[in-house]
Amino acid sequence: MALAELTPVLSRYLGQAACLQLLNFENLSTLIGSAPTLENKAALVRVAALSLEKYEGLVAEIESTGGNTVDYLEPFAPHIESFQQATRGGDWYEGLVTSYVTAGILDDFFIALAEGLHEGPAARIRELLSGNEGSRIIVEQLSASTASNPRLASRLALWGRRLVGDTLLIARSALAVPENTRPDEARLEPVFTDLIAAHTRRMDDLGLTA
Image (cartoon, rainbow, N blue to C red; front, side, top):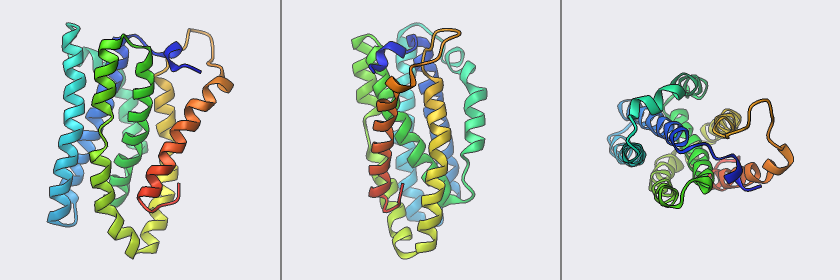
């Protein structure tokens, strides 16, 4: 199924995508303060900066339409705050996996969903969200810890699996489904199968079982 059929109007797309990037930046900023080592702190500063770049890029798209950023984001804030509560990790390691998993899945999804936007903003958004340097840095920060601590690795693998359901629900909420109808689940299945496959590869990069 071409997601273009269910891509929301540009204002709704940008509002939800920017709100999610802001959430990721907020979570990463919190993790900087609780990082166990100075090396971890320095690495997460870079990851947070990359997330902020994505947010600012989406804000630039909002402003290019003449829209107000707060007005675009506000409708999504309550739902995304609930998502934040549901996916908040119990410690620094789980919090970092939360960012890794949720940002990875949602960036992939919003890149695919951009197919239904006008080519100008679609191309800019795809390029903006495609950067994966932040994920690479997170892998570097977590891999040594999980490799030397099987119990931690097992716990984080379980936590990663728990995050997937809530993250996919957020993704589905972005679909523009006509009122009083439901999306064709059979036709949507390949889209979400691709998201899960990419997620599995990212967990493999982290040395964890998806």
